[in-house]
Image 1 (cartoon, one colour):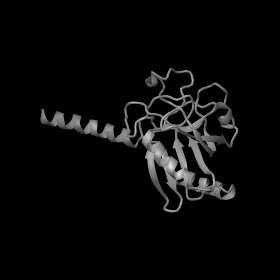
Image 2 (cartoon, rainbow, N blue to C red):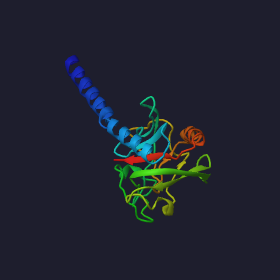
Image 3 (tube, rainbow, N blue to C red):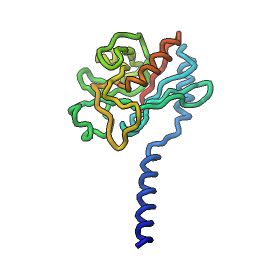
Image 4 (spheres, one colour):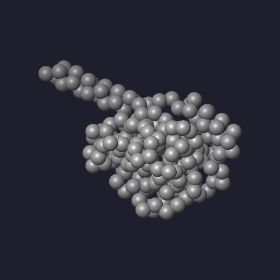
Amino acid sequence: MNNTFLLIFFVLLKCNYSQSIEHERDYNSVHKEALIFCQENKFNEDFYFLIDMSVHSGKNRFFVYDFKTKKIMHQKLVTHGACDVFEVNPEKYKKTKFSNKFNSHCSMKGKFKVGKRDYSSWGINVKYWLHGLENSNNNAVNRVVVLHSWSAVSDEEIYPRYSPLSWGCPAVSDEFMVVLDEKLKQVEKPVLLWIVE
């Protein structure tokens, strides 16, 4: 009986460990490419924002990467777009879909310039305009896909539950938006936000 219990325990432990590392990824090449992009385009070279939409939405997937220390300074949850799924039922929408089309309510991938700070009716009432720099996201301003906070987004990981769905905006917790806002207010050059999958 004890051997059976131990076997079940180790199988469950292994499954949980596998799930926890399922989406771990080496971002070194992404960080290097981001730095080169920032240098060539006169963007901020202190840090950038990386969002990995291949990661489960209940896990941290918004990363603030410091180019100087070569370390992730902050990592938190971020929403993805609802597309054709109701916001109230995110369990049916496990994987991020992408579209650049107007009114698609989907996420967009690629590099964005974090633009002007503005008023938001969501969260802490602050938003930053996102200017898409690629064919996959150049409708961001027209779609009003912006970086903002939302009180429905947790400040801690909630896996295996999912974060709520947005209309395409990368929305973060109110607490995390305060951190991002402070960082963005201190820089003179534009900041890169890069959404990958």
